[in-house]
Length: 319
Image (cartoon, rainbow, N blue to C red):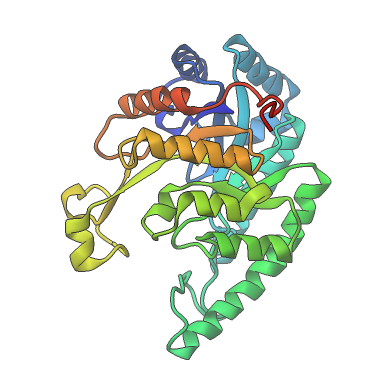
């Protein structure tokens, strides 16, 4: 497995400087934002699509620091009820897929998106319970919208040999593993998971059980931790709308790898990923309000380098 980094927190640095810094830490792969919420600080999607020289320059920067790209990232809402916003997100996704094809990058990380609760609504609606009944009806409508869109997009990606790795995220239609598998069943095997445990911890999902459930549907992995703060969670639960920067009042916080769950847990995560056949990148996504980006990334890299397997297993001579 590779230790990787989503380079968004280093967006204030030139690409070559960011690559040099990460290479000096011993990082193997980078995940590069190319639109949507991650932005595109370290590549310009339109320029790279249009200009072969720009694609060559990116490859040269990567080769100079012995780095590979684990995925292109464009997280947005292509199912938004506002047609202009949905169209922009859809264009970002399709162009990211096209760019991944031209750069021989096998994966684009993204969100499923979230529709409104009905054809006349203006705001996306995250349905988390089936009662009162209009919420169940809204959820059914959302699945109809999502299925039509993702069937076509999955075929588009398949024609270009690119996997779509959906991050299971709150306020998106796909926010937990069974929903991910349902969407995969309705589309094709290009649709899979960008397995980010940070959003699963606070939902009470067991991470290694989720890995086993998803199996070869895992296309990419984010290394990102979460700590649940029981004193807050006991009184207001974990569906917490407190702003992320009001850290003392939140039921849970995103944390740097190792600061929500210890090293033994991450050893189990890595081992279970190997059990299901995943041997790609563990891409660190830094969103820890209690550390700087550099310290959070460096601590995460140090821990992951201790727990990842660098060699393939040999024959079970003892069997």
